[in-house]
Length: 314
Image: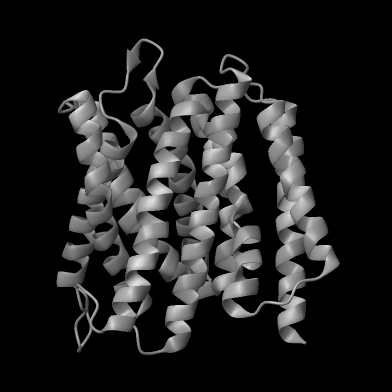
């Protein structure tokens, strides 16, 4: 009983950390009203993954497994999966996330990312042969209406609507990138010959960091070598080590102890902490439109996920 309570508290902490990344991402990409960010979006993503890759490598050194863990994939098939996941899940997601946070509010963006499970199910149609139903499309529609409410009627009116639209579209595509990565990961694990879930994450983090390098170099060429201040370095380390490496370990532990379904339910708390983080750290506004939009998004996601499970069980 005590162990289960600790697990739920740990998953609550994971949700809070993931929620806080939106405010931290906004701070690194845009800065504050009286002090603009000193690093560009691509450079911030690249620096973040230096910390993440180092964190994963340290974890691998202490990984308790009689066979150890491979730092890089072996075989053409493993490399193909790794490259695609690095392309979508690290390079694509991080560039869209960091650039999106330059244009929109942290709280608004955190309300859009829960659409990720919907995109995951829809992408599973061509990738995994997932069947669809009319109710799944209704769920998608409800989610999209919720996103439109969050963006169009945001209480953060100090950010122009066209800026919020640009940021919202980028965050939406970031969710699509992560959905593609989720399906590719499932395909790789179902194959059974690629690697463990931990190895796959380590591989596409390392390769993704390499893929981010040209984008960082172009940004540095255009804007000069950045000089992050102490707060920005701490923020980058927080995103790389705490929000990426530690939360992965804790979330995996939660799945092992209480199951994937119960653990995944905590993901719905991420937008709540995202809005609170934007309010507390960046003085963003909270309004009724967020509640209405979030309700429709969650309703749509639950409908799509529920229909997906029913179809899979048939």
